[in-house]
Image 1 (cartoon, rainbow, N blue to C red):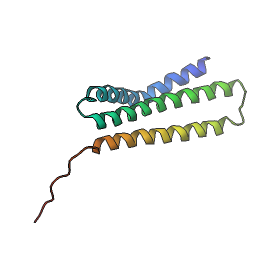
Image 2: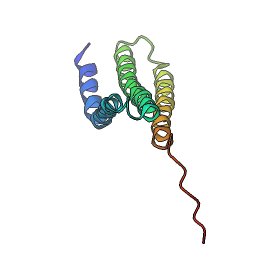
Image 3: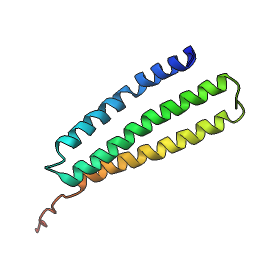
Image 4: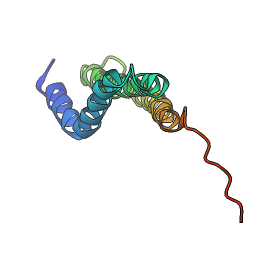
Length: 116
């Protein structure tokens, strides 16, 4: 690792810090409530794990592309690889957020109909 990639990693960790912190808190809380609210906690556990893996994975992959590009290994296709990494990361984060939304609504009881 050279100084460019370390600077990039430190910068990305700073930018993604709030997302990583919230995902870690969600991960811990899903373990805490796993026995009490099984399905919502399980969906939260899977969703926050996907968010953590996607965030760290995209950061690591982009850093690797930056490192390889500075060495001139595949400089012509690095923008295409970066685009694929961004698309895959976006799809994974969308799945994680979708699971968190599902966790918010799964197992709720229907409210009685209001008659006028």
